[in-house]
Length: 286
Image (tube, rainbow, N blue to C red; front, side, top):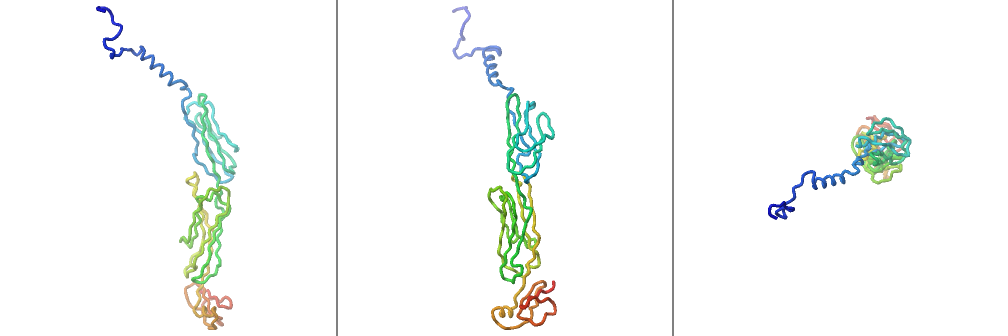
């Protein structure tokens, strides 16, 4: 109508102008209300320190429970172990748990504006190598003959990550890393057969056990056996023929210091060295 006010815009595609206090403002306020409903229960986190924990059987450990909630209502540590609260502030609590003898879980929890969150911490128990027992047999062996090195590590757990290394002086003779997930204590044993050499009596043999728990929140633990000596002797050609049935009698062969030699039924001792037995085992002084 001419001269009258129009109820609709001239074009159906022309949007209505709305102030922040008009319909669009009301819609925005409604969406904000939906978004912020329950904002008093906004998300928060619960954390534990350490995040991984591996302890020796029977030990105690300090555990910290913390939260990102600025004003938690309650919080604490749930566990079947005996515990003591050492210190606390609004956003953290420090506990000590005692006598951890088996694998267990502890739970840190906090309540913030009526909402509870928790975090579980698994505690794994290990049994370190306390004994490393080395055995050589025979302990007296001829050059070129075989002998056995055996190392036992009693009552260790877990076997996974345990490495047992046989050493001759500082040289590695043989090494074995164990696998498996058995957590109960058991014996780890390594047996290695090798051949005696003239230089084998110049250094002692030993065994080293290493338990690497670093990937599970622990440390690198190692222990070494007492050293063991191997007596090595050479067989003189004449003595070798005698041992095969010949009757040739010869004195002990002169050789490297510290090595014993076998000759036939020698009736006199050498100028240097000590005779052992009727077959003439000779140990030359070093």
